[in-house]
Image (cartoon, rainbow, N blue to C red; front, top):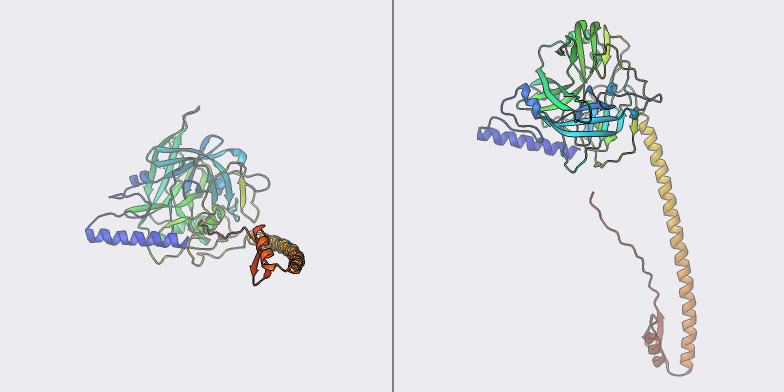
Length: 452
């Protein structure tokens, strides 16, 4: 992960230097869309995805990592009584290649909520999805990580029109708005969670007004460094001062930034997650057990979150997950590359607890080491037995050959008899009238190196 990050940073830096020297006005970062003049319409050049459940589109967007992996808000998923994701909901992701072009609809075969996701406060409101994108085309998407790099922020929503029947839903034009005004103090007063985790949450009062005059929060947030942008966070929840999304005085919308959850996501996905940063000295949070501080205070209004496509005024009920990551899978298979995740730094806020995954992994490692030692012991025992049997065979043949030689010497024709023994295919060699028995041990094993 570190090598991939640094190579990406070096490439971006060199591109910027070359562009400046040549007088160019814009330089694309690796894997990002080149735009000459940054406006909200630039979002149409970015890959995106929407989550479907039971064949119906939700208001939840997926922050894509690659053609196989993406993040989604954990409160967009339903859960079984044991705290695992309910995969009977037939989750799918519909991918967009930009504008209204579709890359298709693909089934989700694994969903993992963060091990400290709290469905009451919406702390650590992230989940990782694995899906079958089909075909051989592979690509990766960059996650905006360093807020200090950003010159502005885009709040974005993508949506699809469900045409019904078997027809593929059609992408609607993405809606985007530039962040306007600083409402940090108001957002902190409305939400103790935000006040305690300002490094990992963002807040805005900007919303989309629907045709029914109801408010709908934007689904994602993009970090902008002119002329580039990268997805950086997902809509988590809102605190409504009022009765509902259709009847309110003020709405504060909170977004979970992904930067502190990249190491956790990389461990779950067993895949590299790529960062989009401009500062070559930036180092990301490398703590896979990171979790937010959960305060004891209560929000100052009605809290809603999850799939708001029906403008629901109540939060989606979800049971509290267990302390370890709640992973659910189906029987589908997929191919992924196993690598490490990003670079190192200290966490932006202290973890409130340690995942039980560490203890489980240690126990599994101990069991695996025990099994390996047992196998090695058995192999050594088999080798010892084979060596003993070969030694006995050698000793027996040596005694028999010595008897034969004594019989030959009695005839007074030692050299002639030696060469006759050789012509009969034995391993005996004649040297100065003495017989020497060779018992070669052929070991059919060759160590080979493999590149992964």
